[in-house]
Image 1 (cartoon, rainbow, N blue to C red):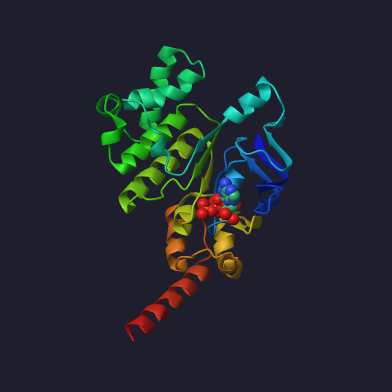
Image 2: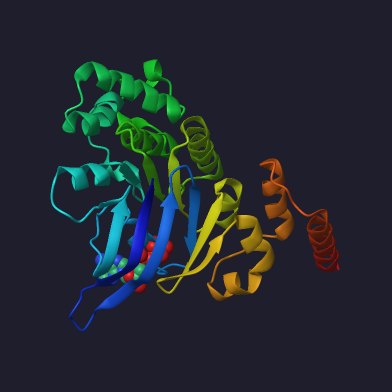
Length: 285
Ligand SMILES: Nc1ncnc2c1ncn2[C@@H]1O[C@H](COP(=O)(O)OP(=O)(O)OP(=O)(O)O)[C@@H](O)[C@H]1O
């Protein structure tokens, strides 16, 4: 079970003087249960890439399969395959429109023909997953919630569709540190509790380090690096720099790995700590 992109190229405004190949010859397989972080400089093709995962964009060339099904074929099977991918866009709260939190989350499943009694169960479960109390929030208007809460309601709307794969494009954009922590905490919980596949686009290396099992670094429409975060951070600093990715201090990343119980070479920590101390000493003059 996987989402598979084969030789996918996407060109915006094709055959015009403004045409732009946003992603080029991408080969990628995202397996069920993975937590994949996608990182890269502005304009490197991250959003374009993820919009291929649920068929929102059709490749200019190449193919996309979800669980073995070519999603650009006609028919119900291809439609169902696309529906198995839930997509949370940047600033998803802009798409809230119903009068109550309940109605907003119920909108998607209702549209899919899910029965009313199951809808209530799904709304409850989805609110629970994003850490909002059903009794307290279901009847409230979404527009008077805090920015972080609105975003959680928007994510709950996608979770209520019961997707197998969850794709989030910059889910923490514009939130304060507390809102960011809340969102990421809930995504981690959701992944742990259900084993749902998560694909998360982020500018922020720290966010990715704290969550992903696999990291994809995009550069100029191509996959520059694809591997375990620890390996990429420790062994590919020059390429990360080349891709314009801001890399936080190694010690901080190491702490993130440690908190997640990942194995780390103690030698690497020693070197990183020593480097950090020298840096601090130089700054102190
Ligand atoms: N609708 C569009 N029309 C024309 N060009 C576009 C369009 N959307 C994106 N592009 C171009 O395609 C390239 C890749 O853009 P994309 O949004 O996928 O990158 P990104 O890595 O997600 O950037 P960001 O981090 O800023 O969201 C960029 O050069 C961008 O200018």
